[in-house]
Image 1 (cartoon, rainbow, N blue to C red):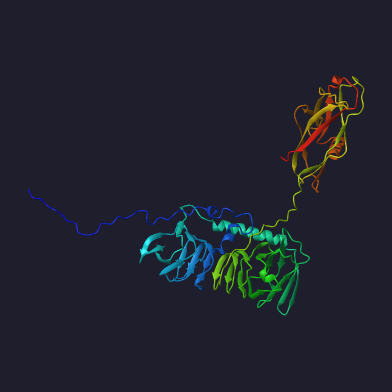
Image 2 (cartoon, rainbow, N blue to C red; image 1 turned 180 degrees about the horizontal axis):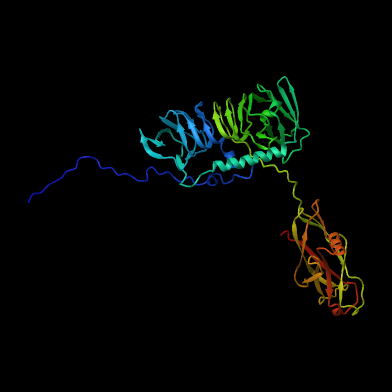
Length: 476
């Protein structure tokens, strides 16, 4: 019998099948739980650049943080310097390596990640990652998106429209003195400490404009809508602010008011000063090109081109979306009536219908449907303290809606009865007694009366009073 001994020379390595898997990205609400996405910027305001696509091939650094569907960059440029950044896809031109900085970077589900791609560096889409964010990468799961960029741009477009609609008639006085422009907002009424105004791009010189906005209190912000009607390229080169305006947070909204449509042209943004001011450029369907230092705040664009970003620091403090709807009236009862059942002898009548004395009015909003509960909190009691607590109470509802009078009753002796009322007046006021009297006289709709019965149970003469409680339940 022959015995064979086989010796294997070499190295056996263990391959971890999960080494290229990244933690799941989840949803932005996990990282930004306090963000109110009903405000103008919402989650987009947590990124210094929020755009459908970003082209940063002309600038070596994309400052701050960003969120985009598509990033186009170069092979030694740094993308994102702080916080969380998000990209759903990218290209690198040429294609040797890419760099990411900041806290963490989230990539789209279609992108590939390799933990040890080349020279000890990871790879994304077969591109070496020469610099990684301090807390690494996360990745969208298949069928999920950390942020739905397209949906957000649509939401931001609607907010841009709302701002334009609200401010289209708010035109300040503009004085241009050899390029030194004063925008006087004294006659513009503020909304929640924000003055929404509309300018034409031609109100400012196209180069070296120095702008002062007056007529503002110290804590008021400004939202400027540039009416882009008839304009496809807005270039305000070397824009600067003075006279205190350089320290005021300003939102710049771009919208075509004549057609009430989103601006889809070009915005070249260029300032020549650095300050603590934080701006927001809201152009969610336009191309925004940043050409000069220093921008601080947020840029919202369909397409963003980064020529030179300068130092980025902080976000624009978000504001509420303005509304043309009048403020809602507070829903409350303004006055309730007394009831007079008259003077009657003992055992003369067993049942009486009272007449309302005084006013029965409320404040609400036109077309509100309300419920008013009424109950007896103290039964009939005379001045000697004797109670006629066997008297019964009923709320009568009479209705002509069927073409003939139909009366229904609700007992309210020991429990509440309920009045239903519809506010129809333009001023948001309801006068129930006046409306009921008209309904009864014209034999239309419904009206309410109050009835007491079992008066024969009252044994002693005297002046009797009862206490009723009227409660607005404020529900349909």
